[in-house]
Image 1 (tube, rainbow, N blue to C red):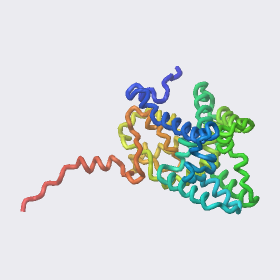
Image 2 (cartoon, helix red, strand yellow; image 1 turned 60 degrees about the horizontal axis):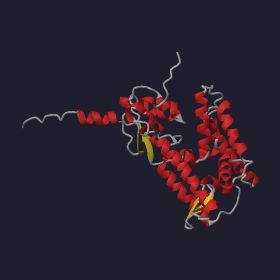
Image 3 (cartoon, rainbow, N blue to C red; image 1 turned 90 degrees about the vertical axis):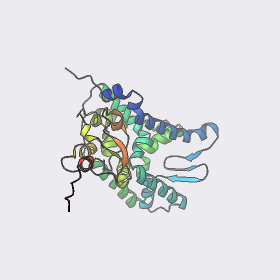
Image 4 (tube, helix red, strand yellow; image 1 turned 60 degrees about the vertical axis):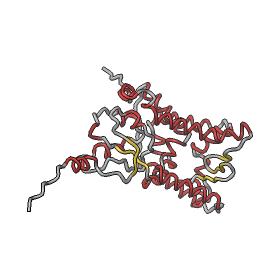
Amino acid sequence: MKNNKFPGQDAIASKGWLVAHKWLLLRRASQFFILALFLIGPLTGVWIVKGNLTSSLTLGVLPLSDPFVILQSLSAGHVVAATGLIGAAIVIVFYMLVGGRVYCSFVCPMNLVTDASRWLAKKFDLPKGWQPSRHARLWALGTVMITAMVTGVMAWEMLNPVTMLHRALVYGTSTVWTVALAVFIFDLVVSRRGWCGHLCPMGAFYGLLGRASVLRISAIKRKDCNDCMDCFEVCPEAHVITPALRGADTGTGPVVVSGDCTNCGRCIDVCAKDVFIFTTRFKNEAPEKNEQITDKKPTPQRAA
């Protein structure tokens, strides 16, 4: 008989629907808020943010530039303006703190497309399909940079689904919707989570950037895990959970240290046992060891 239990059902029962979707709702709010900032200007004439995700100016003061695009530009031999370099530096520092692939989960508009594809595939119980190596996106990243160096052109930005979708949303360009549809169909029928999880060079870049990030998810209460597997079911990069959640026997700390983690928070949402929390990379000592030290009784001193 097919199990009709859905991921997070126990969490909803114990914590309530709102708490069990807290980080998902915050992600959606972040994605739509960022999009709204870019739309306000063209729609109302009140310019809070000018530009797009590639390069923007906030309140006429704060420059922000996509470091992935800036790196392509430099690889192509282009001269980058000082404001572009400053904007890229600001973004790099931010993602070094909060996690590089937070871009993928809280900012990237393509995440809405791939999440919709994921939801539909689960609803109709479609097969996972072809699963390319996760190193494929690193090869794609290398290819993008080499192409820019050899041709002197940022060729990828002419095809980048993220850039094209954002421009379509902000400027109303209709032709590029076919790119978003192509990614949706690819994830739906060819490779489940294939684009973001295996092929996107932008995701690969931000994954490398986030390897040393400070903000992390930790399976701090992993001893309370009841093996419901809900966290693995909802995680877009499920392989990052195993070392942190199952590492007690090998002395591995509970912090998820992989740069592939998107810090999306869904594992926190769906866990009825509250195993996961946000913390920093510096708190990676196994809690089991801390408990053993705390519980150990002091050795009585021998009288002189």
